[in-house]
Length: 114
Image (tube, rainbow, N blue to C red):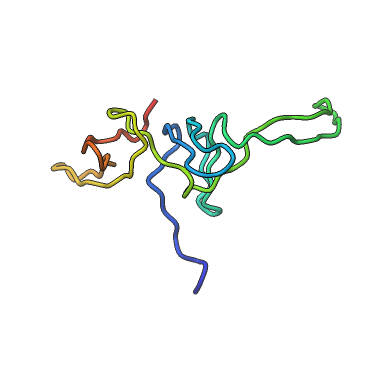
């Protein structure tokens, strides 16, 4: 069945990424949220859009700036060791656990980078 393939990504929440295409090309930020169904991510400080809202019972109206989702293919992970945008590989360690690996320096990338 077409369109039901499971999408995957090696990017995780809180990873530092660089935007590689679009109006915010070159910006660096942390991933706040990933939506695998739409294959998009929200990055802090990138893809800022203005949302016009009406006043409600809990919120005042006005123009709110917030981050919009970016397609995951337009993001590259920044390696914590070599501080460059890199491609990601995977490696299985001796104890059987999988880790993400930087293709440039070969360093393991921690899953929860702060």
